[in-house]
Every structure is written in structure tokens, then in C-alpha cells.
Image (cartoon, rainbow, N blue to C red):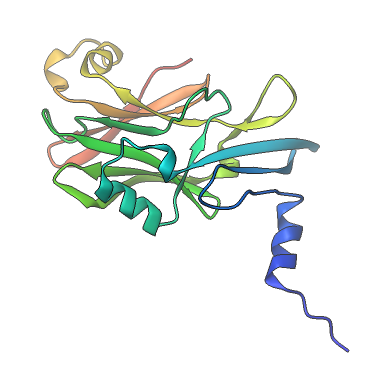
Length: 195
């Protein structure tokens, strides 16, 4: 008699002990990963879209339809990785959200004039955005911040005319960052601050 292996059994074996709470509430994924030949415990905390009441309704609908949660860095003291600013042009009111779904996070940008049609800037597997903490565990380390024109001018060597609206800074906690800036109809990317 052949034994059937269910999808959930395969998923359980792959996860190596991962635990995830029910969707619609805070989720915590934990398990172990091999790093340089050593088994290290990790933890990724994700918040539901409902944890961000400031999001416009159209943005909330898109995120919920995509089954997004918002991963939090291991340093988070309050909900993070949802930002708003003038990302496409001076005077616009745009949103950027780090959307985690099925173990992969993507930076989604919602333009004020087309909130239902987000732009994906970049994506990575959540476990590829873990880094070692002082306590010997791995924590999620990918975060979003607003890059203000004055800071981008400083980083670029003071070319004041280059930046007249906000950028989106994507950071690895305590390491490095990249800035996405919308110029002349497309996104450009450059190095941000080193930590």
C-alpha cells in the first residue's frame, strides 16, 4: 500500500518547525536556518493591513486582495514599513508598503492618481532579508523610510536642483540602504546612507 504525502506534510518538513499565527492578526514565523554550517533560530513578525488605519481605502483593498501582511524589522517598536510622501512628484500623496505574501516581500508604490494599480519596485524572499542579532538569533532586517530631498542632496554631493520630491529608502538595518527616486517618467536607484 502506497503512502500519500500531503501538501501540508511537505510544507511542514520544508519549514523546519515554522510557526505562523492565523491570518488577519499578527503573524509570527519562526524556525531555524543553516548559516555558515551552524543552525540558527529566526523570527519574522508580520502585521495585518488592519494595523495601519491611516492607509486609504483603495490601498487597503488592494493589499487585502493580494493577501499582504507587513513584515516588521527586529528593531520595530511601533508598526512600520508603510510610508507616505511625495514619491512621484512634488505635491503628490503617494504610499509605499512592504507587502509580504507567501514568504516573499515586495516594495509596492501606490500613486495618488492610481491607488488601485501599484508599482512593484523590488522583491526578495523574507528569509533572504534576515540578519544575525547580538542575542544569537536571526531577525527580519528590511525596512522602508522616506528619503527627503535635503538628505538625497547631501548624499549626492549637494546637487540641489536634482531632487524636488521624496524618494523611497529601502534599508537593511544597521548596514546599508538604496534609494528609489522617480525622475523623468521612470525610477532611478542609487546608494543611500551606510550605517
